[in-house]
Length: 301
Image 1 (cartoon, rainbow, N blue to C red):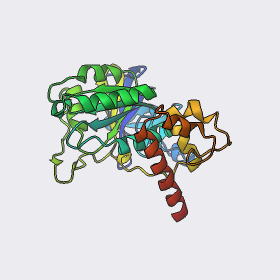
Image 2 (cartoon, one colour):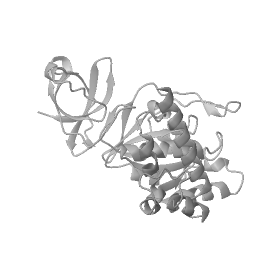
Image 3 (spheres, one colour):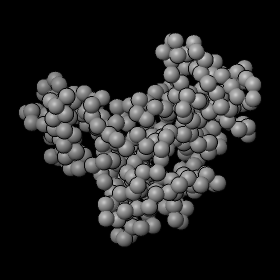
Image 4 (cartoon, one colour):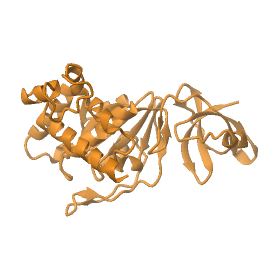
């Protein structure tokens, strides 16, 4: 029986792209499939990104017969087997939002995915790239991979396409940062709808309606994920927050008190590192902000 990957799930149908080896897709069109009843009885719901064994039925349709083991699973958006989370944030229009970037990074760290920060619209920078360099150095020093792109000039597009081969990536970030424009440049002929930027609001209109994998070649698939823009901390315990700030790790183990919240405790090595300039002000400020936000939400629910 053939093997494939679910690239879209809509109205009870699963659209399966045939695979020939690993994640290398064939030139064939996706097969519209139903799920076998036994999957539903077992409480198994196929997700976009699932690798499956399917059976061809009549009229060119198929039946998902078996789900192969998942490497990862995201709840929101519902995507399986994602390896890389690509976080797109623009240099201008809308302006860089480090608060939101850090919030995304917390969720990505908690989910266990590998993050890649992509700074878009470099061509709009009006400070000779000084702000871009600052952000790039800040997050690279922490240990994150950062790329700089411009959909207008094409800078960074080839490097990003190469980075995305051999696995499933989710695209997320601020609305209006150019996700669709960048994807259109990475995948010629894709022709995704692009949203206009509202300068008054500083954000764009959401143009993505459902999760769908796009084959970019070389065994690479990209999911444009509208659900990733709706971030809250309900699935994350307040005691887990500090572990999602990776630069805290080398100091937290030496804190005087076990379970240190890194807020006000004496002998807190994280606070000492921050005061010594070893942890960036913006990162520590956002940690405190998220910590208090989480405590407030837990009290309300």
